Length: 103
Image (cartoon, rainbow, N blue to C red; front, side, top):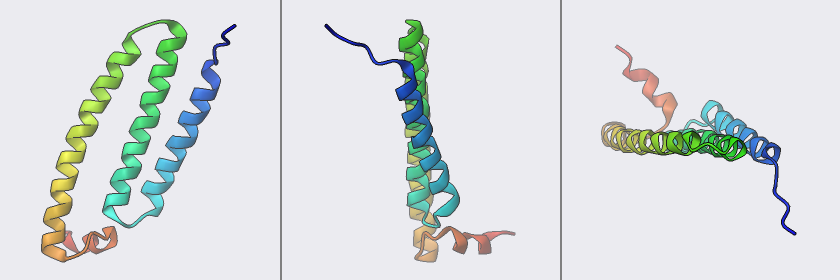
C-alpha cells in the first residue's frame, strides 16, 4: 500500500530553503555566494510551485517552474559576466568594495 506525502512537508522544506537563501543574501559579502543564495531562493519557489501543482492536479505550476528556471539561467549568465568584469577591475568580488563605485 502506497502512502502519499501531503503538501505540508514540501512547503516547510521550501520555507526553510527560502529563509536560508534570504539569510545568505543579507549576511554574505561575497558576490558569488550572494548569487548562490538567490538561486536557492528561486529553487525553493520552484519546489512550492510543484507541490501546489501536484496537490491541485494542475500543470500550471510545472509551466511556471520552467519560466522561473529560464529567468534563473539568464540571471546567472548576466550575474557571472558582471562578477568577472568587476573582478578584472577591482581584483575582488567583495560586495562592500563595490560601494566605492557609486557616482
